[in-house]
Amino acid sequence: MTTKKRDYYEVLGVPRGASEEDIKKAFRKLALKYHPDRNKEKGAEEKFKEINEAYQVLSDSSLRTKYDQFGHQGVSSQAGAGFDGFGDFAGFGDIFDTFFGGFGGQDANRRNTRGASLQTSVTVEFQDIVHGIERNIELTRAESCGKCKGSKSEPGSELKSCISCNGQGRVRRASQGMFGQFVQVVNCDGCSGEGRVISNPCKQCRGVGLERQKRKLAVTIPPGIEDGTQLKLTGEGEASMNGGRPGDLFLSVNIKDHPLFARDGNDVKHSQVIDIVQASLGTKVLVTTLDGEAELDIPAGIQSGQVIRLRDKGIPYLRNPKKRGSQLVEILVETPRKLSKKQREILKSFESTLGKSNNK
Image 1 (cartoon, rainbow, N blue to C red):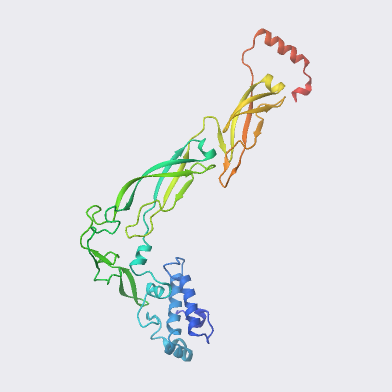
Image 2: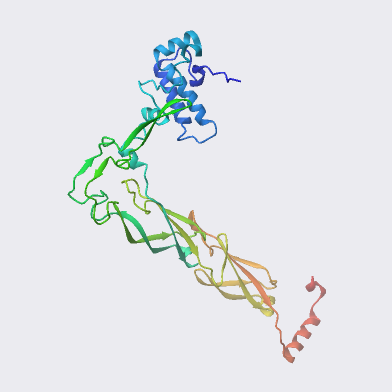
């Protein structure tokens, strides 16, 4: 069963009395939305072909007149053949180039070619994430050749314009498809999209324009960072072969375990051992914190397993380093394993004074 074609005005979303400018504006908007190079959703390509066909007819005054009088039958021999309304056959690339500045040309080719991104890692001490730290990292990456400055040619050598593409770096190739003839704009084979031919390649980089260099980078590790976090260093990746933007460097931060503390979000946890006398009478002890030693007030009658919170002694918040978590101190009451005869007598005497209320 043949699918019935939609009304061309309906396809572009314009009234029948729309001006040429209104039709062109509607096509711009829809072409940008459904162009196959930008929209990978299912059905986008067919939608773009429908929009293209409608624009081919309505943008041409003679075809539009025939369409207004006789409908689709009046233009069936001409619509959909690939005519772009500008006196030439065109594919998706050409139509998009006409309206939006295009993908063609040597400059566009360079803009769209980025250098490769790199990935490395750095390991820091647990203590370093409290105040942050600056670390030096070493890496080897591709950079512009120091001799030819990325031109790929020996200094002083003449660069000739490519005769295959007239220095544009791009050529048009026509092909016949089921929807008519289409023209693609592709990199020129003669100059690999450069637009110029190198007659005397640089001896240092062998005409590549890049050379590998060892570099040291100073990287700031922010306070409060989580283990395994990946930092993005924009532009610190490899250089582009075509003068485009360099890639990025992705740095994974690994944090060593601490012998005393365990991290719980922005809090740190550890345990403090006391004896039964300290637990019964209460006491003050010195505990280790991320900022040094601090006095911990242990109340009388504390039970083993209870937690005392030391505020602002934890890890800073990544988004607000002035704010810190807490240090959670778990109290462990140690029971003596060996008692002398005198100690046993004292405890027996003490036991006789205890009431049932103490054993709840």
